[in-house]
Length: 281
Length: 280
Image (tube, rainbow over all chains, first blue to last red):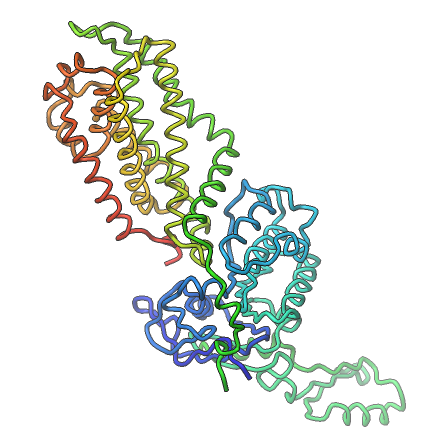
């Protein structure tokens, strides 16, 4: 296993507020790693320390083998950052912006190919001011990946998107991940984590409260399922470790179709809300 | 377990970073393009000193006692001083806006050297100020009988006053860009001191007509000295009698403008912020 990001005991305090209180992270090369947490949980602070925007109070941090507290040009040319809010460069065209920023990097990708990859070929000659919110974010992604980064930070990339735009954006992120770019994604959306992330860490109250694959986070795969059905006028339900057995038994009892049968496992959202509730306490 | 550094292809690490000079020029080209695309801002930036010159030059058209110099010629020199200081206002506002809208934060996250950003700003400012000055000179010559100096030495004075003035006021503009709390307040925060400075520095009102304490205040800032330098270029020896000191004090002009370039640079290095206040 090779490590793109390694964090041990990261801490950051603003005045009286302990924003980050001892976070450990290991992000592997080539994976999509999601950082999930409520507002004020410390995830933005953590990511901005990794991006070299903020200093830390304590802890060991290594990003692509270097300390982001002392960013060099060489290191900056190996990472890409897509910020949460960006509304700059309104009066230049998509192609001008991408070509210009390509000049910052020692080994930039071909600007037209990157514009094609983010699906803006038809808009390449348009001024950025004239684009929709979703297209604007695609420009941000194009500017983030033009330098051919080994590591890409995406900060809440789909906030404010309509459902179709989100799906298209996810495809774009998947194609980047497929090319081998390590991606660190912060988001509020649980479906985004399920759709994109190889692994996820949940941050609450400045600490990591859980880490794992989205499918097994917080014991999700082994959690009890709730089997519910109707019996006469009454609604019955049962929590069980072995829902298949329960359904078989019911099938026998009803001799076929079980009225109103549902089997529910806790969703990622249920697990997440339980985790951040525990973290806040 | 190995870390990623050893995995990085050697070729990638060896690839040379683009030169800061080339990036500075590239920034200047982009900034120029962006500036000229804001059509309304362009029109008003260039029209403002022209309108002022035409209005003031037409209202006060008489000659000054015993010198053969007209008031409108005085205004040409003063407004060239103000045009040379446009960088203060333009950079003060535009950098405050760029800090607020994420431009600076984005640039900070790229390998662009900070020097290249400032070189880009400096070149655009030089260009805009130069165009303004050329327009003012043309109007002065055509409408207000301004005589362009014929001696090379006076043009040399013009050149160093202009370059030191643009540099000093641009650096001052970069420094004050940190003062507005957001882009919404930027125009108000930056414009007010600029207008006040123009009134006390001899752009519109000759220093001889100002109370001495105001003259002393204006002597701290570069604009008074820039106007004085330009008067020496365009009004010549006969105009020197109109100065408070009875001469243009060009050595002091050089000293104060030079001090502002050095002091402004130090101020920028000490106070420049890449992030807005709301961003910590």
